[in-house]
Image (cartoon, rainbow, N blue to C red):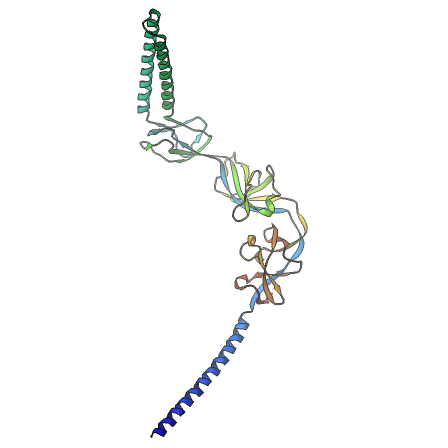
Length: 351
């Protein structure tokens, strides 16, 4: 009985070992098949273009938005209650025009008190001068009385100036763009009451690539194409930023005459810069770049493998970008399919 049990156990173990070996063999075959499939799937289909030398026009365009050349918030110089607002949104105003008035009751009380103090000081000075002739007061007392008159006169002038500040006047010419307060509101000193915008002259704000900004100068004429019109306007560069933004672009401001008031702040427009062209420069399509053009990364196909390269770029011509280093004429660059690529990925070029 014991012998039969041992034989049974040995048979079971043998079957188990045989089954295990079969499983291991099947696993190895599956792994080999998966490896072949994975190898086949690593080949990514892409579209390409060839880096080539060509002549490029010096004209380039940049989009931007119009901003008013003058935008001013008119504030109260003193605190008080708004009792009158003489203008409404859309009204044309000029420098010095009364726009609003604050309650001046407390300020007028201060003026009356200062006037009374001055009158009293003058009366006292008159008595002291008469008394001084007869020896009734000393020279020191007379000088002190005269000083009190001067102080009282200065206090009156200060109170009168404050009284004038209850009238809110425009500091610029323009149009009332926004009214921030209503009659009856109590405001503090420095509180903005109205916003005045002058759109007789507009600024087109654009951002120019670092490779192009060195070609521009203050005073250069620029053609401007508003998005709401087919007319071509002529502007003038009035500012080139000395520092770039985080994207290596430089803010540039272009002044546009808008005396006919056809344009509005916030509208879009395209600035057309006409600079000298360039001959025999190496270019690649803009879509060849991985991410932003400013990242300067491109996949180059070499022997059926896409290799990620860092290059140097020059002028951006819109659909083409100048390459100043990192590529040679005839290099094949990937223009479609980069999202599926990593460095040293096998590729298949499709037409």
